[in-house]
Image 1 (cartoon, rainbow, N blue to C red):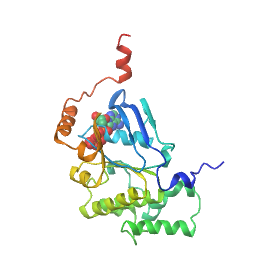
Image 2 (cartoon, rainbow, N blue to C red):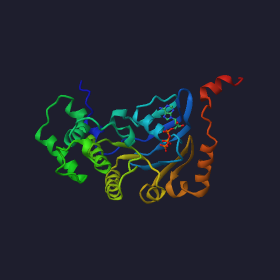
Image 3 (cartoon, rainbow, N blue to C red):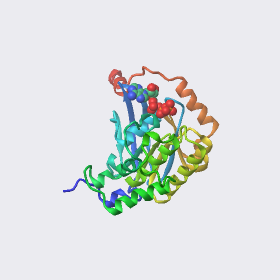
Image 4 (cartoon, rainbow, N blue to C red):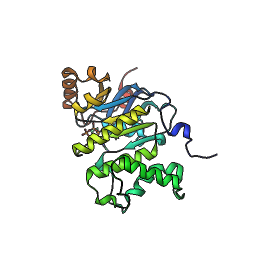
Length: 264
Ligand SMILES: Nc1ncnc2c1ncn2[C@@H]1O[C@H](COP(=O)(O)OP(=O)(O)OP(=O)(O)O)[C@@H](O)[C@H]1O
């Protein structure tokens, strides 16, 4: 049996909600995300916001499957983590590798091509079309180490297009990115949303969130609010979120440790 994903789950819309049931995520037993329950509807477009250290990246990593869920459960709506497209924070991406723009984008499709599979004419055309879509036609042979931050982010978005995932996770995609690139990539996000994909993005610019993201999860280690953006982003919720992280306990015990101490 082939381990390659089938077309039915690769492209297009997400089949079912992503459900989080009392999810707690810890580093060395210290919780970074605490008791998070809720659901990302298929085809929804959600911003994850909150103060520094609120656990936003940690949540995205857990959804992407690159972090173990300590307590609680994530139901990925019938998909496995490899069907999730994941764009980590720029600081976590190593681009000192001597890779070309073309190869970097083509790597988005490695599940289908296989690591040593040859590319057919149609595969090459898909890479070129994705590069054209992100405004980088003609950049195919450039080394990724030679690109500006904005150009490199466009390359990573083109790679996500090749991956054709029904769920896309973006961790601060516009951090240190110029305005023109941000606007172009926001348009791509809208297009992916229109195609029925589920999108979850960590963002800091609240104006951007209000304009482009219908749903918002406000996180401060614990969920403060999750729902329609206009309802979530209000002054009261934001100041509660700030207070939560001001009272941050770096050495707070994990839930399991607390439960073990409680008398029955
Ligand atoms: N690899 C790690 N090992 C130990 N602790 C970590 C690790 N990564 C993050 N943390 C801690 O977990 C908490 C949540 O971090 P996380 O990066 O998820 O927050 P964030 O909301 O994405 O913050 P920011 O907006 O600053 O990027 C922080 O207290 C952080 O110090």
